[in-house]
Length: 417
View 1 (cartoon, rainbow, N blue to C red):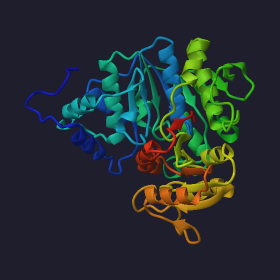
View 2: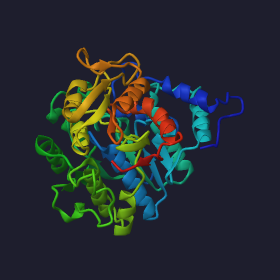
View 3: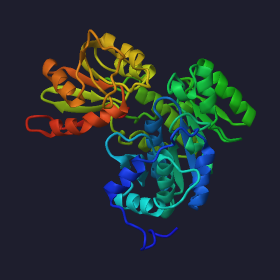
């Protein structure tokens, strides 16, 4: 493809390009990978020669990041695609570990914005197309792609060249889209499988039975993390298995899946260790030190993720909680509240209360104001937890970075999630 659009076409700036992308919607059209295939064909895009597809309820972004880092340590030119972003759109797409340049975003939008495309692509589809375009321009040999929602009907299902699929876990999430029971949700996520392509999974129970049946039907070698298989064992140098990140926590679960996947792809143990040491994505058990208090920012947005987060922290924290209306706000809060000394409810997105009726709990609509209240009520040395939504994390994180950098506060630290 050419570097940019014909000179006669308008050249949007970066801010204008983002505004245009954010304005693209499906407007009720069904989720269907055929939409993405049509966009790939219309723009003469292609998938990288080799790819890994990461699907699941929790941990997709972390596993994707670890796999990308491990493959790059093994010598591959790697591309990474994750969703959603927390603070910066460019978190979604990286080549060789670096965010896609703003100029690449601008050039892509200039190429596509005035074209007549049928069906008209939505934001997620265009963002995936941007990733494919950027990967091709940079000669990416291995792409690691995080699915958006589910597997069977997600735009990422249109990708070719997939050499391995990871289904991290399956719990109740996206109920309005994937189904209201584990069997339906697992069936949708298992739709990511390709005939004969190996599958690594941490799914359990009823969900694992569904995934196993589909793997057998398609002839996919299946590797299940049962906590004992050598393939999933962490290297002795793996970080994060001390202190408040126990072996049963989110980091260890994600790391075991990434380690198994990298080994199946032929990575050395040194490359596996490098992958597991990858810097964490924003708002995955991310820590800030503000005025003698520790703030843990985590995007936990469903009951399973919230339970893991609560178990990783000492009881008595001050909780700032906000959830999107379409999510399981009450159930997610119920997993975090018992170990909290105080709770401040806030809006994950403007106008969205975390509970239908927050009566009996303090409700502060503005997330930054809610955070300041929680910090004021937390005694020195205490922990403040901000959780319930990655959208909430994105609204709070800029203020947290400023607070942590202010005089007489310690520098921010971050650990893998």
